[in-house]
Image 1 (spheres, rainbow, N blue to C red):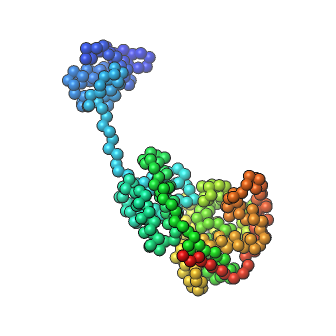
Image 2: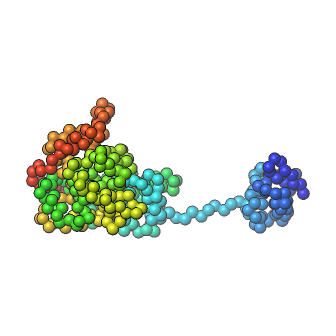
Image 3: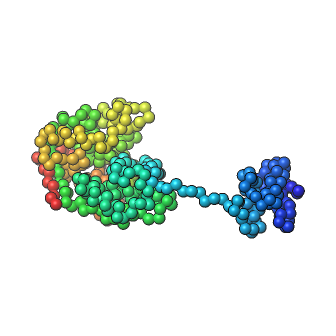
Length: 379
């Protein structure tokens, strides 16, 4: 037996298989190094390495590697059995992945995933989802009455899931990207909701939804952007709401001016705060899900007899029309909506619009610009 210390490492040196062999150990004490040495000599002599403890096994493996000897089967680590990746596990991985977990589209993805799970079930293997299955899913959803735009959002959520799986090396290809979106031209809508009809709908909405609808009507913000507002986003003194890239669909910083008529509504809702929740729109201390607005909104619209029925999202369209008819500068209008950088050349994108410019523009916004108009393209 030969155990010696070199620097901070205990080395063992002995004759193994007729050859003088030395190897360093991870032992902290001489006695431990001696134990490792004896265990290796015993295993090599018997040709049985199954009883080696982890420290002795690790040293023995390095000894074989250093000498270039063929590794005995008992020392070769078994390939880990990889559990089959199911749709449900893939969804959980996606929703907790950085960039998705705190994304403003997370709730939209959750809703889309619910439909995917309803069709394919939680335990469906991800490897069983390929182009034919995705195409069949799109047809199934349209036949079930879902709008093409909704189905395309669900495909986008599936594509995001596969993108995450590619980044963590679970899959090599994103099949959702290989499937074309459905055409959304049939069923396209042009909607303008009159001020009178908006207030009639508002009167018929539950109390908890009213400030959400008023905020959407006065800002042109998307439903998810409104529901995602926190106290950090809202500056009532400067009358600006600052949304981060992860809070908006476009993935860019966005400033939304607060109309003077909206100040009382925001002031009221911000008086109430829940422990551990910084959102400004709360129902029993929790932020409502986007889909929770759908039924109350539809009931209120039906009650005043509008047919076709305007959707909650079309308050955004109404804001754009009101801004245009109020004479708001197009670039400011598009910047507030979040579309300002679309189809713009370099010179147009570099114009600086200050917070004061935005507030001044929104103060000129009026809301009574005609009767309700709802035009729906037919198939």
